[in-house]
Amino acid sequence: MILNVDLASDVPIYQQLRDQIVEAIADGVLAEGSSLPATRTLAADFGINFHTVNKAYDLLRQQGLIQLNRKTGAVVTTTVADPPFSADWTARARTLLAEAVARGLSPEEVLESCRSILDSFGTTQPEETP
Image 1 (spheres, rainbow, N blue to C red):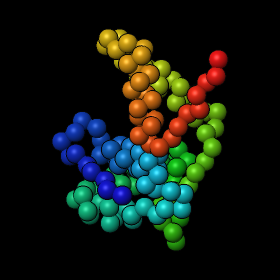
Image 2: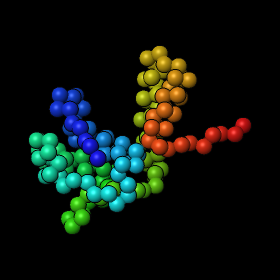
Image 3: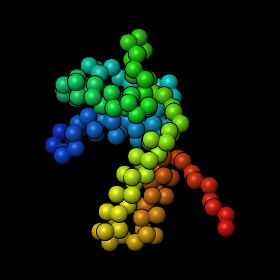
């Protein structure tokens, strides 16, 4: 897994790390049971404070995507989406989709973009039958 951090970005570094790890899980690069680098190692690799990596890992733990253990470190875990996650995800998606429409994208463009992104993760959605 290759992570990139843009130190000049407006997006906080911990959020960049968290987002890239989530994408690696979705891409199948990180499967259940995969170990993540130790916080101090990852921090040293990027030349950042290890508390920044801790914050990213803690977010992933709170969201049920990794487990943290003193012996095994950070390990990817799969969990089924719970109702609070589904509600939060739907609210965030609604806002993002509203922004796309408000900026002039057609519903067809939005759907095509969503499908393309989903397909890039190797997930396929079953076609609906009329």
